[in-house]
Image (tube, rainbow, N blue to C red):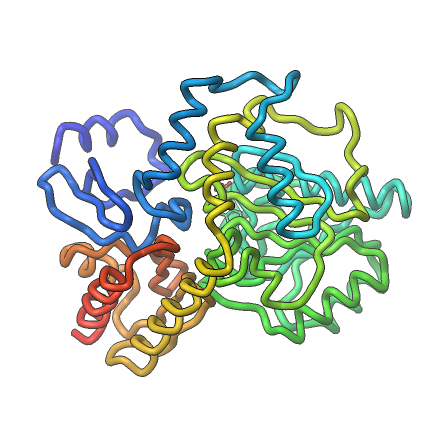
Length: 388
Ligand SMILES: *Cc1c(COP(=O)(O)O)cnc(C)c1O
């Protein structure tokens, strides 16, 4: 084992099972380890490096802001923060943005919006938020409570109260729940990412949105993983023809720096007032400058490219030997493989392709701008590994 791997094992908390690989450099969708071995990056830091490693335009935006002002606190205005909020609102029709530093924190803010909105409108006993079984909303105690997977909960009781989980597709379950519990909000991932890259049925999402609208329950969409061009639309909810009341995002929006965002619709734009929420680093000018450069480039041409590459991946993997199912949307792809997903990922790594898992699936989240020939090379390697 290398010295740095030794040090890491000794001094970094044991929360991650790392592969015995140390990445030292890269460009775009290609990275190199300490032995100068080349890998094609099909995970992009779990959907974070939207335009790949050390992308020139992103690096220029970030470094030029870094040399101007790296941080000022939210007591003062800085240009990138306002600029980014304006772009997000213009591209989505939402009215206001709160910036956090991560996906979990963005969801915490959404949950606070729901609590305040519902208690002011319907009374203090209206606070329950419905999420889906098999969902993932983060690692803080409250977003863990929102996460509909028991195995994340067991060791950390008591969690924040006020969450109920229904099975995806079960609209009757929601109606029954609403009959005896006052509901503040429904929070969904349009495609369950950590849960195994499982898109929700369009009819179910539409029914949820109608139910929420009719009963003045907030519809909150967690776009932490699915957002920012990942599914071939700017946000995944746009594939479903719904209008959420609150949208949260993080991961890919920053292109590699920590930033999350909560988008408020007109209905909730003024729910949070002075002192109701805050974040020391939220809206950090360097992170926002990077995010501006990312969002400005997620245009129709790029989204069309994402859809085209997605089509290629579905065509390549559907019916391939050792692959039982292909799920997902855009460049968010899940492969149900005959071989255990972990073994596929390990074998791919040996052959120079970095992939992710999500539950029992192999998960692919390449950079949105991965060149077609690099994508083809990676897909052929993955296919050959699965066929073994
Ligand atoms: C990754 C993820 C989160 C948590 O984001 P962090 O930045 O790790 O806090 C929340 N929701 C979804 C859907 C995610 O994929």
